[in-house]
Structures are given as structure tokens and as C-alpha cells.
Image (cartoon, rainbow, N blue to C red; front, top):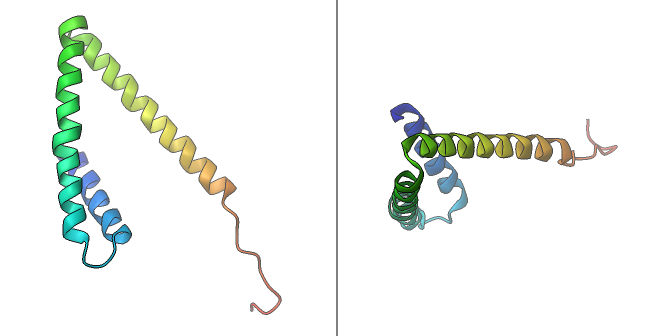
Length: 96
């Protein structure tokens, strides 16, 4: 978990740096950290607790595994579609 979380967080911070206007980096990092910590972990704990209480830990683990696999496949398919459908710049006569 430690290595994958670190890689994910570095990627998120870098992407946010690219997307935010100059001078807004700290604000965006605060919003990003708050969203991850409060919204993501809070909902995960609450929903995970409900599923574990009702169905047990094995079903919770299986459900999370299926969810992660589905998200991975969706991301992979989306990346392939975007790369295939992206218009290539047309070459003009003046280009050498």
C-alpha cells in the first residue's frame, strides 16, 4: 500500500500543479487533501462498515476487488479509446 499510495499521490500533486492557475497551488492542495481525507476515507469507512456488518469481511473484500478491477478496466479502455480517437495534426505543405 505504501508504494502505490506514494506513486498515486505524487501523480495527483503533479497533475494538480499543471492544472491550477499560478498562485492557487496551495489552495488546491488543501482542497485535494481535504477531499481525499474527509470525503474519500469517510465514505469508505462508513460504507465499508455497513457492508461488513451486513455481509461479512469476505464479501467486503470481494466487492472491493471487483470494484477495483472494474475501475482499472474502465480506465484502460478509456485510455485506448482516447488515444485511438485523438485527431493527429495534419501536415501542411510548409512543414519540413
